[in-house]
Image 1 (cartoon, rainbow, N blue to C red):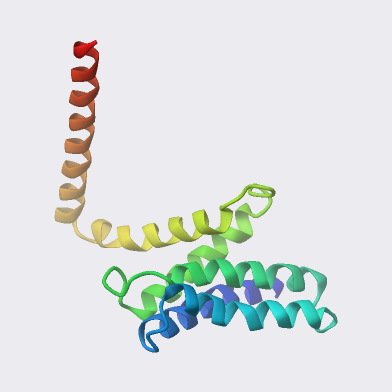
Image 2 (tube, rainbow, N blue to C red):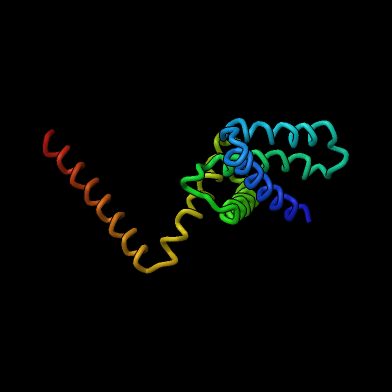
Length: 155
């Protein structure tokens, strides 16, 4: 039940931040801060209303999910996509929170991975897009190889 609440927190945090960011025109940082402050304050001042696990993890998951809501409307414009990205973030957090213990930037990294997962889905839905993606990856690899070869010849 606690994990389900954390997943719902991730989804709600991402959607709410995206809404405040895009519809209310508050900007990404302000949207994140305006929503994170009351959630974190509630968990800090009223920890007895929640289990210790939830009081510790709800603010962290919410803050991380607000990073997802900071995405530009030009890159991701669907609330369903934002919700799925929040779900992916929460699942990543639940499975890697012990691994990232003590590492800075774990929430941002997890949010970035979640967004990249959602942005890559259209490439896997169409065989043509997947082929184009593989060709682009191959071109980048060849270009990098040529640059490293040119640098070694100049020395």
